[in-house]
Amino acid sequence: MRQGKVIRAAGGFFAVLDQRGSEYQCRARGSLKKNKGNLIVGDEVMFKPLQETTDDSRGEGVVEEVLPRRNFLPRPPVANVDQVIVVMSLKNPGCDWQIISRMAVLAEKENLPVVVCLNKTDLISRDQLSELDSRLDPFPYPVIFTSALSGRGTSELKDRLAGSCSALAGPSGVGKSTLLNLVQPGLCLQTGQVSEKIGRGKHTTRQAALLPLDSGGSVVDTPGFNRLDFKSLEPKQLADYFPELEALRGRCRFRDCLHLHEPNCAVTEELGKTVNSMRYEHYKYFIEELNQQ
Ligand SMILES: Nc1nc2c(ncn2[C@@H]2O[C@H](COP(=O)(O)OP(=O)(O)OP(=O)(O)O)[C@@H](O)[C@H]2O)c(=O)[nH]1
Ligand SMILES: [Mg+2]
Ligand SMILES: [Zn+2]
Image (cartoon, rainbow, N blue to C red; front, side):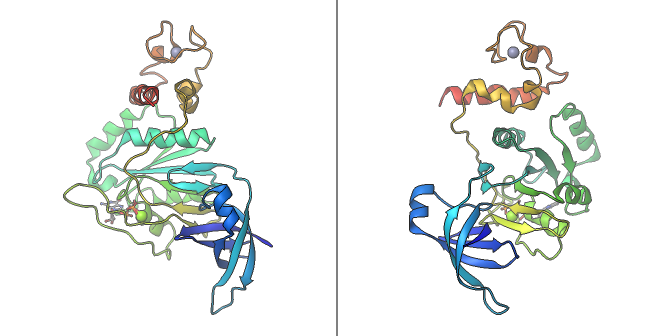
């Protein structure tokens, strides 16, 4: 048996990269599928090679066992990453701030660092950009402004990706694959137009793929999504996944303060100071949503 990592998953086949860098096309053993649910990109597995990879042909194998996951992101399904880069475009499609907070909650739940990448800066004016700067003061995550068109910020993004395994996540059409093509020439990832009529991407990337980077580390390019729901989250847990609220833990009058209408609440007192009001609106919205589940 040999250890490897699932780098692509589609139609019951799994591309597994072994520790020497050879890729095998694998199926999963039947019992594995039944007991453990699906294998996903990023999974560390033990597999049995049936045919070795040669210069002319890709090897084949059977995945026998999935090793325990360090972490798991449900949307896009990916395991064992070191950080999440949430990508949004500022225009075409427009930036959905609430989805950024949603993605961040899912990442925080797994204890994963979050970086926000705001792409297509070439499509907005300088005034709009400086307006954004004030909107993001304060903001609990590092923000990288990029333009795949002008090249702005791509070296900063490259530095962020170097040396760790990152998942790039965000709606369809925001430019995830385009940015990766710039960061790592030669990837040749397919990119697609944004629909003029509905202003959304056309789901060009169909499957997540883990891609090695020359700078060390790797990145998972993922299909875009337009909705993101929370599952199995208690309203009282939510503040743990908002770092700026978590920082105020223990400072409210009531220990079980939900930071909504309670008196002497440290969070509402910090609004506009250490707590960004937009982020607080997301928090309230999510609490309501979780209460309705
Ligand atoms: N103006 C401008 N267009 C961009 C930029 N980045 C990407 N695009 C365009 O946006 C469109 C969508 O880019 P993709 O890279 O396919 O987007 P994606 O996020 O990978 O989308 P999915 O694979 O569908 O999830 C393409 O037409 C790109 O050329 C940018 O910085 N500025
Ligand atoms: Mg893509
Ligand atoms: Zn409070």
